[in-house]
Image (cartoon, rainbow, N blue to C red; front, side):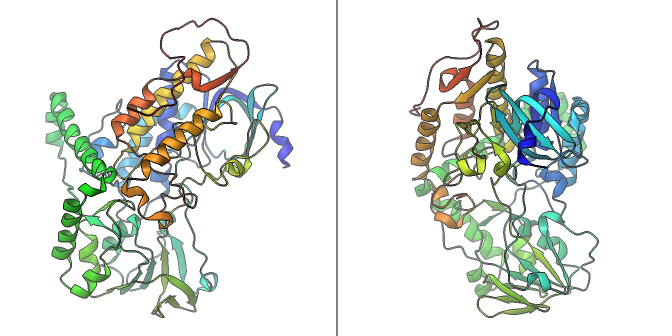
Length: 512
């Protein structure tokens, strides 16, 4: 279908949410709670869940405490301190069902392109199920969406089985097989201990060692949840312990001079887990803790010490027949290759096909720098909002906290749009620029910027497009008050019917 067909008329809604993962489900619930009844959620898959639906590798689970990885309006009796993937997926699905979100979701509907029409002040979307229009679009596709497949010569001709850890092939039996694992990020840390007892031999190719902290995981038995249910203040206190622990670690990330004790704890964890000094040396990072994604595990290091596991401190440069070849000349014969090579973080698949007010695509607008005002609004793309957008996360912030703060902001913005009689809002370029400048300036002194372009935090060379440089409390506070003056407004402005909930001030400063 030609790109121009995006402007064909189609099913109309006041708000269309793209994606039915944790973000999309929260968006639908928040919008309905704020009085927006004409909401549609478009999901390309046949069930909700997002990254927790797609990632099913052995050992997959949450890397922040469970009590922080839940919606504030839907507390859950988690089985463990760090919830496993099946439980999180069930939580997202059951929450969607309980709150009636399933009735709003149009499954097996992939959004292929979108265009803002400046005449009608509406978004026109082309989807696999036909055209749709909306006053407002919310992108809830998430940063962990598209697996990154490395360009390795000879990989396509590998005679065995190849799959990405994010799309685990459960039909492949690893028992007695020779397995090559490419990459040692967060996924490998979780699945390697699970597959190690079954495989005949595992060759792990590590281009960069990870800082690994002990994981304070523990069972949360039903009796404890019954007690917490009878005493909500106790549950709040336990949640507070987790929250402030995460915040304390975040403070160390923002002030690297305070990191040595935490780095010492990580080195002690390595020393007590890996007796072999040569292997310990290979696993010792040469960069500051926190410059890459923070990882916690009590099982990864022991798995690497098993006789059938061999760690190669080199990147993979080629595959020749059954041999996986490293840059240092290592040759490892394999029957199965598992690509644990991460994601295109923040690289929205729809961006090349999403046209803003001037006709440019979001991919073009972001070609040299991904930026968004408060990680939520992009100048030149009216009535478009991003969930978990640029520079909103860190190694210690739980996604639901960010989501709920953003959704309070977005619902306030849409309420303002509706009650004032406007039909379009677009963040001012100067507001976006001021926010971006302040964020990048603050990031300079954090550990997040110390790895330069080698970390996925740098979605654009030289620019950290992932991390929020301040505390989670400051993030929530910054998104608490919607600032109407940071936006331009179009359409007939009527007297507000619900005054007082949003401010007209223009706030570009970040002094507190």
